[in-house]
Image 1 (cartoon, rainbow, N blue to C red):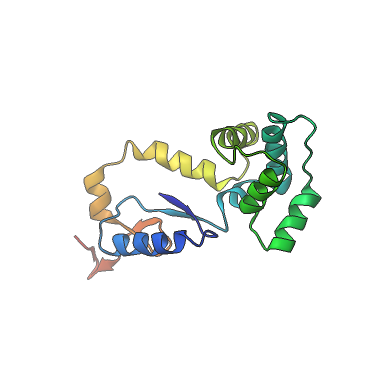
Image 2 (image 1 turned 30 degrees about the vertical axis):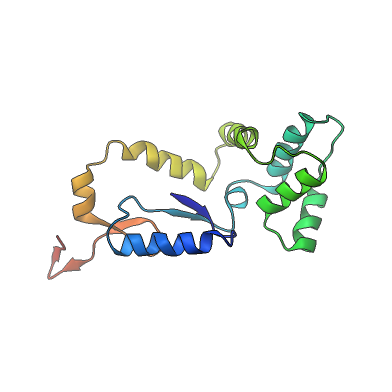
Length: 160
């Protein structure tokens, strides 16, 4: 499960995730993108490139610049993902950040995996298919930040 921290609508969802984890009902953990998925994983230049690709499918003459993105973020006090959506809408690219947006970002990440938290999250997901569910429940717990951590020891032994 992953949520953007910047989204006001996700505040209650994040509280719900924490409560479920505290009750032991959320066994796989969760991830919070800070402030949002885009800025946690991509540079502004990469995001503008992706936005330009999306816009060019509607009108090849549409241009979007990093300066324009930064100006929108500053003036409207928006995180980068929201600012990109606003710029696309202003330029009459109404498809929003749907599958094409995701595909464009995936292409960028694939061409330069670098140090992207999303790549590490996907690697963990791939490894999890081989995890021992019972052993996970026995030895791990979802910590306050949403990641799996070892259960605290009591009297020199792990809690069971």
